[in-house]
Length: 318
Figure: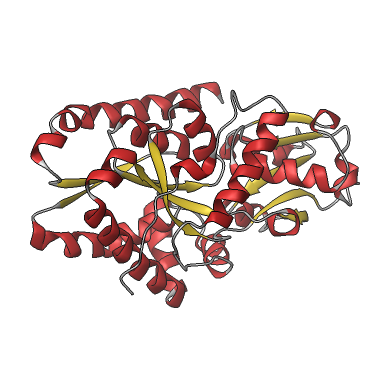
C-alpha cells in the first residue's frame, strides 16, 4: 500500500512541477491556458473527451491543459499553490485543503452526484450501523467516505472510538475487503458499484445519513482576476454534464475507455448520478461546515475553518 501511494504522490509532484514555471509568469501575461486537474474515473473524463471546453475557448486563443491525478487531494494542492486553476473533487478534501492553505474557492456544486455507502460481505453478521461497534472498517483517511462513516456512526449513537479505523486507498481496501481483513468498507462510486457486482450488502448509503455533494473548485487568484473566464468555463461544463445526464451509455463508455473500469459498474455509477451543475449556495457551505466541525471534533482537522469564507458566486448564463 505504501509503495503504491508513494508512486501516486510522486506522479502528482511531477505533474505539479511541470506547470510550476508556467505559473510564475502567468499574472503578467494573462490567461493563455486553463490548467485543469482531473481523475480518469469521473465526470471530468467525459468533459475532456468531448472537447467542449477547447471549442469554447479556442476563439479567444485560450488553451485547455488537462493534468491527470490518481485522487483528489493533490488536485487541491495544485490549486492552492497556483499550479492548477481548476478541479473537481468530493466534499471532504476541500475541507482539509482550506485548513492547510486557504487559496482556493468553491465555484460550483454537483449535489449528491455519486452514490457512496458502507458495505459488508453478504455472509457478515453485521446487519445495521449499530453492529459496526468494535469492527475494523476500511476507508480513505480524510475522504468523503470517511465523512460518510462519521455521520453513520453518529446516527447509530456510536463514537469514532467505538470502531477500529483502517486507512486504505480504494484499491487496497477492495483487496482487504475481499480477503476479509476488514469487516466493512466505506467507499464511493465507481468502487461501490464494483463491490456490488459481488456478494455484498450495503448497510447504509450516504443519502441515508447525510447530503454528500461534490464540488468544482478554483484557485482564488484565478477566480478573482479572471472571473469572466471562470464563468464561461462553468457554463461550458454545465452543458457537458447535462449531456452526460441525457446520454448515460455514451458517458459510461467514455469513462470505461479512459479508466479500464468495468463498464457495467461505470454504467451503474452513471445511472445513479446527478448531472445538474449549479452555483455553490449558503446551504452547501453550511453542510460543508458541519462536516468540517465533525472532523475537528475527532482531532483530525488541524484547526477550525469557516467554509463560507471561500465560496465564489457564479451566475450561470442560462
